[in-house]
Image (cartoon, rainbow, N blue to C red; front, side, top):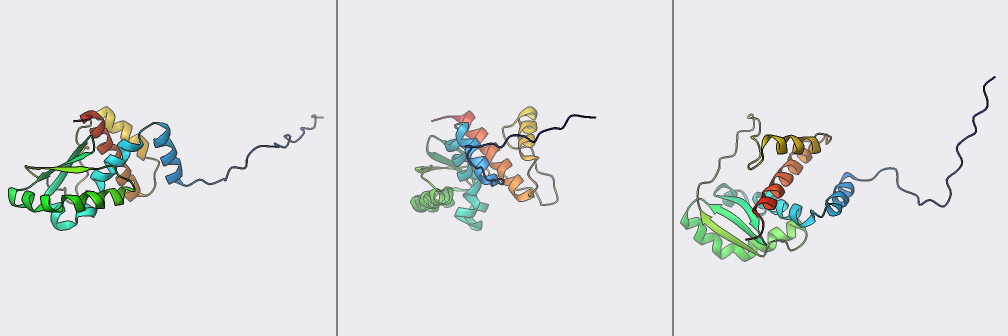
Amino acid sequence: MPAEVSPAPMRRNLPRVPFFTSLGTVLDKTVQDLGLGEVVEKGAAIVLWPEVVGEAVSRVTHPQTVRGRTLVVTVADSAWLQQLRYLEETMVEQLNAAVGRTVIEGIYLQVGPIPVAPAAEEPPERPAGLDAEEEADLEAVVAALEDPDLRATLRSVLAASRRIEEDGPP
């Protein structure tokens, strides 16, 4: 006859931890623990650019990177560049509000070619500046997310933050 197995002793004096923790809380804690908070916030400024500046400006601009606390933006032509110089302070304020704290202090505008976004049916291209191994690592991080919009947003933020890490301060 097998011996009776006694129930596990009750755990006393341990803090209660909620069973469910939001993904946002887990991501925030992980980012902060890795010391990447500011890098991710700068990447978020790049990702949020189209939403902050609107469709018309977004079509003729492309945020490249963040150097120090300056967002580098390519503009389609000098006429738009001149117009956007007048809006720089407002754009900086709106970007920082969208990110949730002051990450950008200025915008450096330069004339250059604007990449064309791929059509919705086309698969997304490899994030700029990532080699195959970095892309595989990035995909491993976002693969567990079921929400395709959240997965795409996190992929964009992480790819942008990687570019910022490589560029470093000005």
